[in-house]
Image (tube, rainbow, N blue to C red; front, side, top):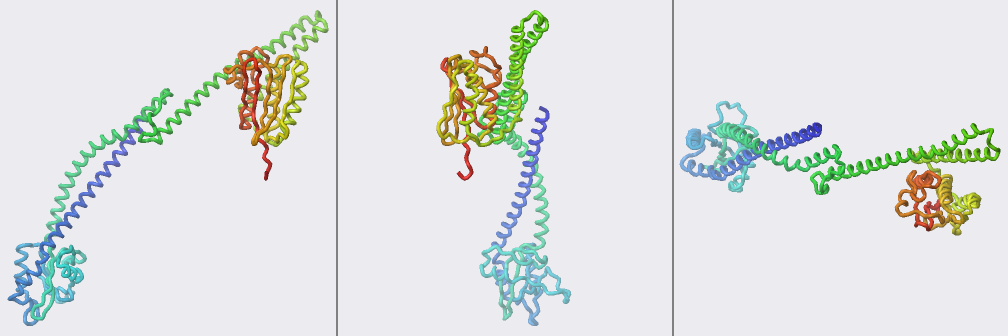
Length: 500
């Protein structure tokens, strides 16, 4: 019981841990996805709201002032005032002056003191695409201050006094990155801690409820298995096909049925074993007692007995010893058959010839008892494929049984016929018959009809026949009514010649 509970607790703990980790991973993924999409939404909105910012700058600032001085250099004072005015309103904005090749000519956020510094360029492809769609698309461009990073921007092309170029405005510069990074860390910590606490409480509650429902069927199966282990062999899982663990439930019910069936068979075998011991003891004791009694009589009265009496006693001793010998042989034969120590050596042979030989032998015994024994065989009965010695032994037992119970003046018939796939053999007698109830037990060892239990024999003959038929994958059947005789029938397969 403790092991079952331990295994159940381990399973529930594993499921709980996996479920909790999945929820945490999903929660963290949701936070990152939400922040990422929110940031992208903010950038796209900002870009569309400020898409005309570069055009407005050109229209307002370049009307009375030139972006270039007479010597062709950049009008730095103009751009300095322009940048300071714009950055005073939005510190995240960075303005750049580009030539038609994308080269950065001037920006107050860049250092232009060292003439030996390599020139910086901005990729013109996003700029041209932005101008072509009038800023209606979400497009990212180069960030001159962070090489390789992309930012939202606004841009416009100018042509002033024969000089062309671009005004390129980064709408989310380094200042915004710093502020965003700080806010994001703070926001993520608050959201993460809060979400984690809420998630753990929610998962704990949901997990307990879910596990109670999900493991309800499992707990029922465990309870059933425990009851079965404690000895309630009739308990089964209700509606196994509809259970959550239907495969386990169906297999358990089938296993329980098999175990119960095997136990019933063991009980039955144990009952038969006790009957066997009792009957064998009785049948061994009787001939042994007779033998011992007559031997003692011969020893004590040997001088007083006539020669005829001595011969009579010796014949009784001989008959009893023969009966004892037959009984021991039958027991030995049956034990070998039941232990499956006998392997049939199948070969083709003519059943009619075998039946004819047996009838010839038993006709002599039948004459002594005034019982007629005859053979009835169809013409052209094919060969059978079986173990001839075992089949002969079965027929001998059936003929012995028929001769034993057929009264004087009776008749025994051995019938051989065939159909398309089998050869049928039947032994009929005109004996007292067998009632319906006894017909189900006469093939069990040491079980005889009550009506005939006073006859000679211990009931192993028919049990041996049944075992021989089982070795040939066939059965022995009986058809009988009281006072109408009995017929024992079995079938053997026809011999199929190769290529036939």
